[in-house]
View (spheres, one colour):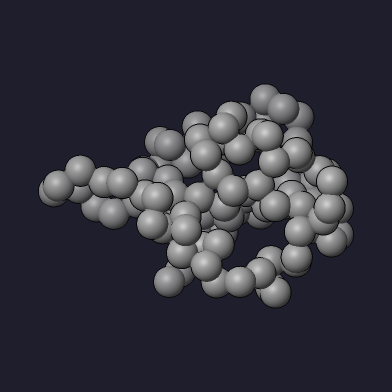
Length: 97
């Protein structure tokens, strides 16, 4: 597996794709895009288990999971999956435009 480009050098379109895939119902607040960073490597095949989040390997050996989250309950559900896998959580960041 080839390592992905570090997040600070990653093209802006990776976040734009995550925003574009966020579907909301009329009258609801738009989904927020989050980046969850964990220690260790996850294969891109884990994307479906993490609700379609983009899975990117970072140069430092960590993995970034980036995608749209409908609400705080959904975010906590993703964090529960991180915990259930026994992954070390490095940080959670809400991405902006």
